[in-house]
Image (tube, rainbow, N blue to C red):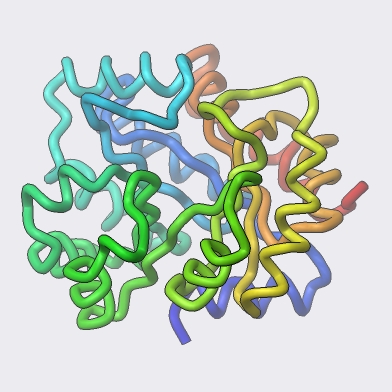
Length: 260
């Protein structure tokens, strides 16, 4: 079993969803971003998505776009991502969340080796589909990493089946069509998507895009195996530093434990 498998075994035995938190490396600087990721864990986050800053973050909303732009302008590079993974994975499972180009540039084999050496558990690749991921899937398998692909409300049953057979660790279900960002409500299509996905896999299904507080986390935890939060953590870091990140994690953690 991988660390992600062990995590979901634990949360399912406890009768709750896992809490997954995202922050990009290098915002506002590398040391602060790593400290904020550890603060998330201290507040109750179970799994950390270590964001890879990229110049064309296609599915990311304005909050994350501004953060990654500042990180890149400050000189953040892929090497800093592995540094962050190494420090974060000492406290909780860590996966990278990043677009395909940086992996392809480094080569899947080298990226996978460095990620594994840093203690990483896998990678979420939002702009890569399984049919075009052969080299990455081979490298991930060789280094015992979990490849994690996304599904969305528009995904066909055929697409859900491919992702269900290809993913390891868990499935990332985007709750809405559009970019990331906090919302007043989580799309009501998310629950339907989770139910559809479960017809094609026994893997845990996590829901992301839109969750920003404990009440929303409780709602999603009522039907999903994981609640994934990104933009709200970035905004908390921007407004109040690592302490604000920890407080938000505590609120979200309480939410996944009580459900709706």
